[in-house]
Every structure is written in C-alpha cells, then in structure tokens.
Image (spheres, rainbow, N blue to C red):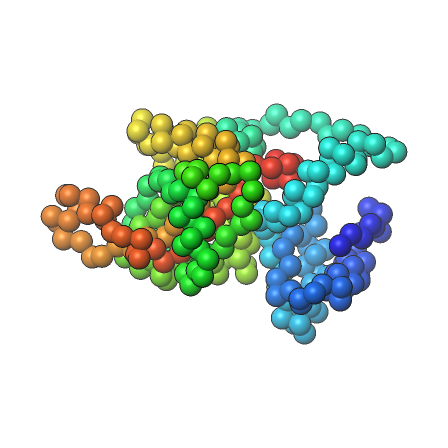
Length: 277
C-alpha cells in the first residue's frame, strides 16, 4: 500500500483518511499500527484516537517496522535519487555511536523496576534452533522476518536475562509497547559503557553497566556479530529457581534447560531506517 501526501498537507485528518483507506484494502484487519517517525508522534496519535476507541486498533511507537524500513532502503537507492528536487541527506556526526552505526545523543533512562532481572549474560543460539523452537511459540515475545541469505547454521548473538519471576517479566516487557512503544533491539552504548533496550521511536533504557574488561570484550563481540548479520539478534527471558548459597557459588543458573525460557524476541537493528531516525 502506498499513499503520497504533501508535507504541507500532513495533519491528523489527512493521516486518518489514509489509514482508513489502508485498513479497508488490507486482507486482514490490523490490531496494531506501528510507526517510527518521532516528528509525527502527536499527529499520528491524534489520527488514531477514534480507531483506538471504536475499532480497538492500537498505535504503537516502534523501530520494528522491518518491511517499511526495507522498502525505504530500497527506494533510497533506486527511486529517490532520481526524483526531481532530491537532496541527499547530510551525515550526522553528532554524539557517540556503536559499531552498528546507530547514533546515541543523550543518556539512557533508568529501566523501570518491574522490568529488571536478577542477572544477564551474552549468548549465541543457532538460527536453525530458533526457527524450530518458535514455530508454535506460546511464550511472550515476537519473531522478526529472517532474511533468506542467512544460513540456518549461523550462530545468532543475543542477551539472556535471568529472573525468578521470568514469566511476569516477559509479559511486562511485551506490555510496555502500549505506553512506551516496542522494545525494538538490544544495543551497546560504547561511550557510556552500557547495555540498553531501544524503546519506542527514540528512547533507551539501561539494562546494565559494562564495568569490567571481560564484559566490554563480550559486548564488542556481540555488536560485531550482530552487525555481520544485518542487525539480527535475540533477547531471551530465562527462569531462575530460588538459590541457596551453594547454588550461587557454583553459578547453577547457567545449567537450566531450554524449557525454562519464558520470553523470546528475535529482532533486527541497523538498516537505513534505523540510522536515519
């Protein structure tokens, strides 16, 4: 679906008309409408008021609009440069950036206490196992489209968050989309030595500090591996039992099996739309 509107004509009424037209043409009525333009948050929210009230269709701030970003990337290479009046966008060198090229220009916010886990670690899982175990996924989470160019034998990097209340934590992470927007990716803010959740259209929540050399090396490897896969990575929420002192000393939480996963998100970060936000 495509609808062109002049910038000078962009307002809530115009966007509402376009949304109603898109919904009418859609083969299945949507339950959520995701958008990534931070400059248009208030206009889109206004346009969506009646749809949320009367049709129960939610507007969600998100950087998980994968198909739209891919479409914009393709058009930025093959369509827009040949249009009359096209002006190339200047590169933004302000702020710090991770290896993926995403620019962070402001500090992260504190992670809401109800989204905190007891511990976290970097990990890798074979793509074939991810595909097999998410076919009929009953846990909280989402799985992004997987590029055909990535072999099934590929090891996908990710972050595992451990919690004694993993199911509640996973449901809470999924629920933040309504107010704050999707958690679209896990990233490393290198200049501030933090691991963060990227939330909504421009927010970031600090998950933890990279406060020793081992964690810094693991974080750098995570970002490099993620970039090599076009931004593909995962977030998993892992159930922990209640530990005694001996369990903690021997770090037995790492011995738990796959059945202890209560939430799983496969995500993509780093394409054109992400970098140009």
